[in-house]
Length: 153
Ligand SMILES: [Fe+2]
Ligand SMILES: [Fe+2]
Image (cartoon, rainbow, N blue to C red; front, side, top):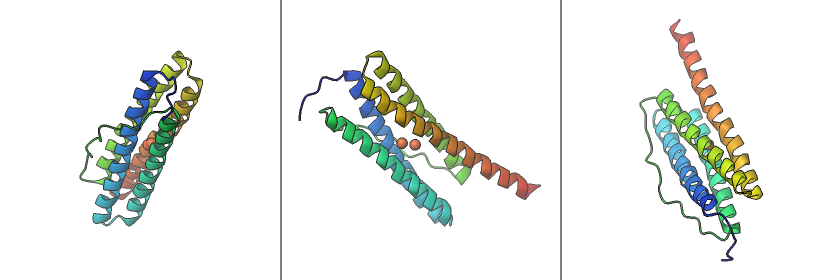
């Protein structure tokens, strides 16, 4: 592999990001199967699509690491947090996505500080997508709560 002169902490952020993105694949794939068992086929399809998006993020990071001459090194998959109902799953998902947003925010800031323009753009794009993703989980949760309120009033 070609050695590229790259800041070690940028590589550290890429490794942590890969661990989180692969954890997200595991999380959403598991939830898709779980809600399928609950009889929520449509929700299962949505969560399965989320897993696919997270895999695409993981692949972008892998490509980036290879381009920098580094071997992908995700070291820890986060254990899946289960729940008793869809609301609990979505709450856990929002917390997880918020953590991913914070990581990309820090990675973007660091890349800017060390003058690594390409890494800054790379992390910035993922940061924007994950921010959108966290918001999506919150909107979904809100919709569920609205439905609950309509049913109970
Ligand atoms: Fe992601
Ligand atoms: Fe995400």
